[in-house]
Every structure is written in structure tokens, then in C-alpha cells.
Length: 123
Image 1 (tube, rainbow, N blue to C red):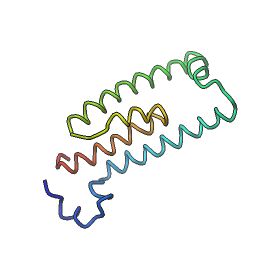
Image 2 (cartoon, one colour):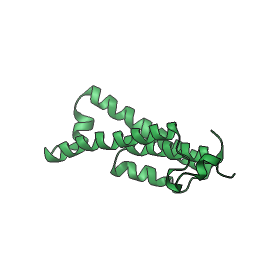
Image 3 (tube, rainbow, N blue to C red):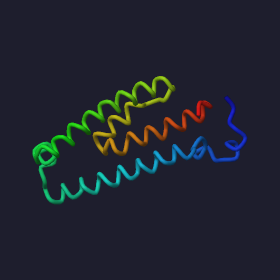
């Protein structure tokens, strides 16, 4: 499918960005910054990261299980959607979530997915 007339005027890097993709990209940045502020605090305070996450009471344990299940379901969605849409290297989102945060990589994937849908004319 050929680019839309308004897309031809935009630089290649900015093509296919719509409001939804931009929203997901902003959420991705918020997820990265928000999680890494607390990760940095945990490092500076020499905290037991996993011990704090899974050993600080039932409410925190519930949150940990909640996020773990969402991350697994989201990872499955990333693989399935990426294959369906022909997106390459989707596994990187999952690997990077272990280094950064799923709160960063999942919205980032959703932004790139939205761009792909716009490019394919499915939006």
C-alpha cells in the first residue's frame, strides 16, 4: 500500500504516528522513568529487590503476582500480534522488559503496533 499523501511530506522517522501511537509512546517513557526512579532508590539504599517485592506482606505479594501474570499475558500478546502483523524482532520487547520494565516495553510495543496498523491501512 502506498503512503497517504500527508505521510509523503513527513520525514521517514515520523511517518505513521497517530494520536494513539503517540499516547502509547508517552506511556512507555513514563513507565521507564517511573520504574527506574524506584529501581535507583532500591540500589542506592542497598535493598533486597526481590525480597521487598515478594516479602513485604500480602498486598505487595498480590501486586507482584498481578504484574507477573499481566507481563506473561502481555508477552504472549506481543509474540502473537507481531507474527500476525509481520513485525520483526518482537522478542526484544520481552528481553528488554527484564532489563528495563514491562511498563516501558509493553506500551512501546503497542505504539509500534499502532504504527504498523496505520502503515498497513488497518486503522
